[in-house]
Length: 328
Image (cartoon, rainbow, N blue to C red):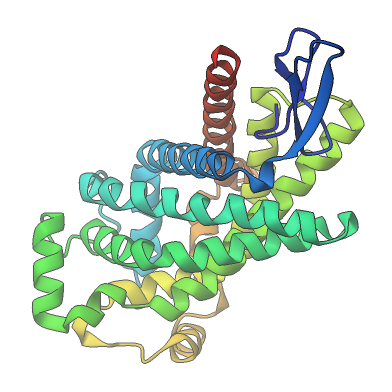
């Protein structure tokens, strides 16, 4: 059931209503009346929405990060390795604890911005421009959460490449050698990759959900949410792979400053390694004689887990909220 959308039933309980309004029955000695109250004007509704977004987003981020962390470590090492460089297969969980400590608030912050922004824009914009609302909300959520996500990503990738033994040591030594700005190394490239990624992924996912629900004429179940999340994740990840490679190179270079910026990094990679280096994650995921299928399948796993956990958590929290309202 969509959160915050309810109407009164005969017994006074609340049921789903597509018009975005909440109805409350008021018993009158003469007759029973139904009064319509917009939930936009209810601060409690906004706080419930914000709470659900923070919890669902944070949990989804934790689960997908923990589940795919070893593969993400290998991906990082592949992207950093130069031609002929050896890939280290040990310590695939290096930095996981510190990374989860950053992923939780970053994911919660993203959804704390994304969901309210999306709902506001959907009310303002015409229905045919719903994709614009999803794109804008995703980009804004990514921009705000980057305050936490970038330092988390810097520490994670430095540890994945064996530069530091622990997250506290990484933070202390990065600041000592590179200054506080070192914690935001590659910030521009991070935004260059993640703003389009966040905007595209959530736009594709939301639009797929809208189309699927219209076709099926019912709400989606858990496997269907996971399936659409996989498709959205796969499509977006493939399109943004070159940006991900550039971001990784800038974040792990440290004080050496091999690259002076995004454009210099791109030109250097193309000049010294060729365009294929921009698709290194794809070559890592390639299985001989198996074509594109396995690569897209793996990339989509993350989207499947993330959106599956996200929607299930939102449903559980929404049901709990509804039960409290009924009891009241």
